Image 1: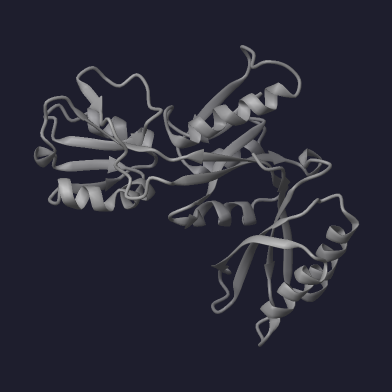
Image 2: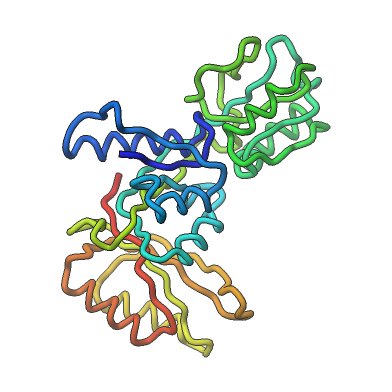
Length: 284
């Protein structure tokens, strides 16, 4: 099996992909020599690889406990046809500083990482290196690559504690530099085709667009409540090319195979402008 992820190796997405690979393999066999995690440069490429059949699945982050939903991936899943989330994985985020050995923190002039990692370490960066330039990278793994390219030692990176095989001369901070130590990211395993969905699930993930009139969101929530289903989260995103309209992404504790869940989805489709099933999965 091949699972796509946002590269390079060592990113949090890579860690999630490896965990998904273990759970996928455990259903039939141990991870074999033909099973691998395949890196891509950005999230559109990650999902495109699933659509065109280059890989069997993709691991993408959908929400962080501090930063909230990953907007780009919510939009990509909404816009993609015939892609579904079939498993979830919760990964603990433990940010560490990667820097050249012997360099004082006050001497570091640039810090590279994914924007979410930079934001999640804002207090540490402001205190320890207030004049450093914070540089966005496509992923935490790419951030390391940028930092080690600087022979002066004036560049550092933020990456996960799981990072291995650092270039000679570079070290990792002994402790987490996250502003909040209790930090987790929710990843989804994406596959192509509705037949990839599990027959039963503990959670359902879908989106809906309500009519642009008073009380329409309340009506949607009342439908969910009518069937005794507990929502675990709800998040809104603007509908593209339709100013003033919003799409609601909703996750709920329920079994996709249950009759009342199918009845709920049918009722939602009847009372909303759009309703799309994004996935069904069991808790990781």
